[in-house]
Amino acid sequence: MDLEIIKQFDGYEDVVREAEVCRKYGLDYNAEGGAEPVVRLYHPDRLNLRVAEVIEEAGSAKTLRLVSEDGYLPPFLAGQYIALYVQVGGIRTGRPYSIASPPNQTGYYDLTVRRVPEGLVSNYLLDEVKPGHRLESSGPAGHFHHNPLFHDSTMICLAGGSGITPFASMIREVLERGLDRTIYLFYGNKRLGEAIYHDRLMDLSRHFDNFIYIPVVEEPEESDRCPVGLITAGLIRDMVGEVKDKTFYLCGPRAMYDFCVPELEKLEAPRRKIIKEVYGAPLDVQRSPGWPEAVRADDTFPVRVGGRTVQARAGESLLTALEKSGLAPPSVCRSGECSLCRVKLVSGRVFQPSGVSLRKADQRFGYVHACVSYPLEELEILL
Image (cartoon, rainbow, N blue to C red; front, side):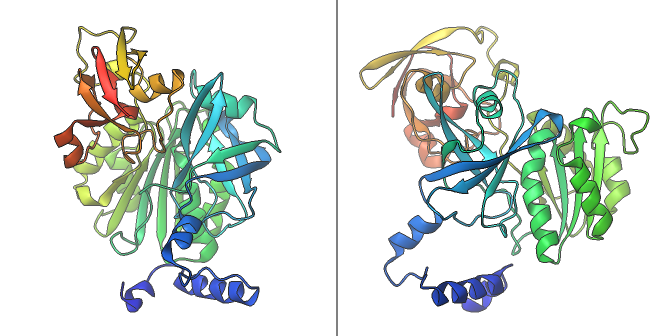
């Protein structure tokens, strides 16, 4: 890449200064020893982490402050996530969590966890994990971040529930580093008391002119002073004006996407300027459009894989069924984006919710993402 283009990236001068300091103390991260060590340094397959602190948050959420057991945390872009890998009830599984701390904080990663109904991993992290606990994770991943070459300097962020976490990282980076960006944050919750980081966000909005925080609640208390209802096109227009030269970012539950994307279309926001974080597998896939009426979520089908046969419920993903049987394909996003958990469908039919993206090569040769594929009949797959 041309050096003059590289110099236009946010943080270029910071990286140059950090490299000079590293060389002063005998650390050199350049590629003179070959590319592979550098790639492993910045994109490790696994991280060994330790919980340094557990911080109570609003809405029964907790923030796990994670430090490296190896003395080094790879850099990331504000908005990216890591996948935590845990062993719970004999099941080896993983879940992605957005990094809530800003990338300019290099000493730790903050992951904020909110309880999911019947959530195997969230319940474990919230109830069992204490300071000193050791965890394993992937390296940082994901495409949900500001790209200064393609995105506008005015960011309109729409968050719902725990979807606030990647925005916490983006906001802190912009404000702490004095970046030339303006952020409008619309944060929807049922009640104001469930809004994670609410007090901190209010304080930041009072101190920085380029950060405007708009909490939105569905069930307000008498003392609440904020918009009531949902994040509508009218509310967005009233707060930000014209949508020209603005980029929209969405992160939250599936229902929020289904409502907010059409609202942005009413504002004539270009599709290319609507950036959506992957939102995970649906909580109740049977309610997804296109689900066959003849199949119930509790129906069970045999899945033949590598000389074994495992039982899989129609209402749970192939990835979950494989993990419960002791087979753990690699996975990171669990949303059909990273493609690490893909398997070859030799025979049988699966259901995939709308919005799942498959590479053309995967479609051609019969591969599916196990994390968002649900058995509709007897299957045979190859890992």
